[in-house]
Image 1 (spheres, rainbow, N blue to C red):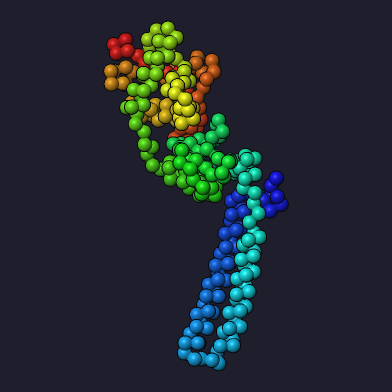
Image 2 (image 1 turned 45 degrees about the vertical axis):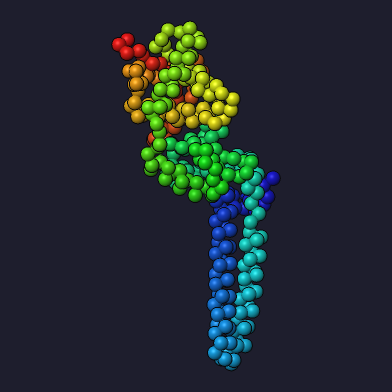
Length: 266
């Protein structure tokens, strides 16, 4: 259950901002105490005994101020992060922060799609996984900054190897269903072939596959080494279900459903 302090701040970002303020107050108090201690040390080194009573009294008061600031810092953190994650509120806050920061993102299949990366919120250990890289820096504004930086980099994508894998998986689907070469098949069937090994679907998820299809589509690399041309028909297959959704460079939802490979000279 999220307690009163959580609802008071209204968000993880707000709670962390308040805690940061208290931490700054403690740093300032500690700095003042350090300066007082240095004055006491200098007075002792030089024998300026007439200054000692005032310097020591100031140090004692500043030490008390440090204790108060440390207590405020300790008491200022009562945010139930685990509950915030498990309830889905963190994902909502992250999406809201992305929208506020001008970063296009939306939720699909329990993941946050933000071209060119896929974000998974891990409630088990209060972390985020960005393209399979776990990160415990979960402050929404920090995550959004990382997403913005990722969008400014060109995605690392090996389209040549990917289209060859697609062609092989496509041929397997065609053969298993006794379909004519060049016929359109469901992308989901191709994905199932690519992830046929145990555990493969966990390592390479549908959102990742859909993202890679989009990257390949945008690359313009639609021909295999053997000259077979790929196309991504959608209309009829989209209506039959099994749609894969991703997000475009402009932050719009993009659906893919089918794929075909035309033989050279066909």
